[in-house]
Amino acid sequence: MMSEMRFESPQTLEAAVALLSGHNGITKILAGGTDLLIQMRGGRVEPTLLVDVKSIPELTSISQNNGAFRLGAAVNAMQMSEHEAFAQSWPGLTEAAMLIGSYQIKSRATVGGNLCNASPAADSVPALIAAGAIATIMGPQGIREQKVEDIATGPGKNSLAKGEIVLYFTLPPRAPHSADAYLRFIPRTEMDIAVVGAGINLTLNDKGICIEARVCIGAVAEKALLVKEAAAALIGSTCDESALEKMGAAVSAACRPIDDKRGTKAYRIKVSSVMARRAATIALNRARRTH
Amino acid sequence: MSKQHVTTQINGNSVEFLCETRQTLLEVLRDELHLTGTKEGCGTGDCGACTVTVDSKMVCSCLFLGVEAEGKSIQTIEGMAQGDKLHVLQRKFTEHAALQCGICTPGMLIAAQTLLERNPDPTEEQTRYWLSGNLCRCTGYNQIIHAVLDAAKELRGAKS
Ligand SMILES: Cc1cc2nc3c(=O)[nH]c(=O)nc-3n(C[C@H](O)[C@H](O)[C@H](O)COP(=O)(O)OP(=O)(O)OC[C@H]3O[C@@H](n4cnc5c(N)ncnc54)[C@H](O)[C@@H]3O)c2cc1C
Ligand code: FES
Ligand code: FES
Image (cartoon, rainbow over all chains, first blue to last red; front, top):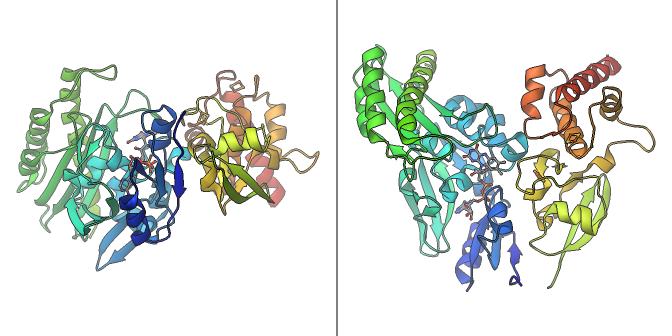
């Protein structure tokens, strides 16, 4: 017989942290539930306290401060795509979130849940890392900030301490001629898990030279990989064929994938460079169009 | 096990129910409230047979807890027809033979209704994408798509 599970839906951060840190048992945070409720049903997780964070305004809103967007960790994919200013500033991150499952799933799935669940194939995570997002985290010791790339540590594992909640992600202000893109490869067009995902964010100067870039790839290692060598291949170039070629080679070199039914190691390594090059081309065209 | 008291609106009526915290909305609808129109196909968010709307957003009721329904407004297939009068989508589904066993149909209809509320004139491609979370093992989908597009046409005609 399963033990009883208490359910709470606090309205404030302080109340949520107090509940989570005050409980002597298995606690879980509930966002959209599209990972957690399946794990609970399968008996893989049996929380004795479930804290629904969707009534806390800091987690469920998108706001803007001096050009920098703050994306609540419990904002769902549909909400992101329906927020015009956000979707326009961060098309890559928005399209990554909008790749998650069906419309039914997108109405629930959050970026915070996608990150904290720590699947190596999570779609919004490479886009979030490429964007340079910083997570603000609150726990019993107070508030701290952490780079998104340091949160998921391996399949199903993250670096959060007991009682900690990811509140929101802060994205850097958008510079002129700057844009992002995310692409994934799946065996069919909808409803599958990435074989490879690639997120790219880049900034050009007035002459079309790339002055900043971040390249992050998913599903090719135990967690999403930020590939500095790939970014270095773009920076200082016009992102011409040869720079894209070098960037793709650096991406392939960084992969340490597994073989599974969705793709072999060799296949993932090859496709990662193709996805990264195509995502870079999309980001580049978007950056050229923005002022 | 102590049960939680939940107050909600279902198909426009105030409804109160008691449920265990682990029970899904799907289980509450079917087993506690005997609204068995909403179906269970997979229980893992893949098939869409359990689709309902919560505050006008479509969700899989198998991935939504009963306790999360507190203060929310839910629509299920039982709220679609007006008494004996079928909704245009329901009528078009029967006219186009867009169902065989019928397990996917309630979820399909709710999903199609949310599509037409957002976009009265969807393309075939938009319709196929919108319904990609609703699996059907019987019809081969074409009749479903035709029924939805035909219903959209009729609804647009009725408005102008
Ligand atoms: C049919 C289906 C298709 C899917 N397709 C995809 C896909 O294409 N791509 C993809 O990447 N994923 C996919 N998923 C997986 C899932 O939908 C995503 O990972 C989603 O983003 C999870 O978000 P959630 O809000 O539902 O998380 P939840 O299930 O609520 O939570 C997930 C985990 O994160 C923790 N958590 C949540 N929020 C916080 C927070 N703020 N602070 C700390 N911890 C937190 C929870 O405790 C839990 O352990 C799919 C799932 C289903 C059912
Ligand atoms: S029963 Fe809910 S999606 Fe299949
Ligand atoms: S009619 Fe049988 S599953 Fe669709």
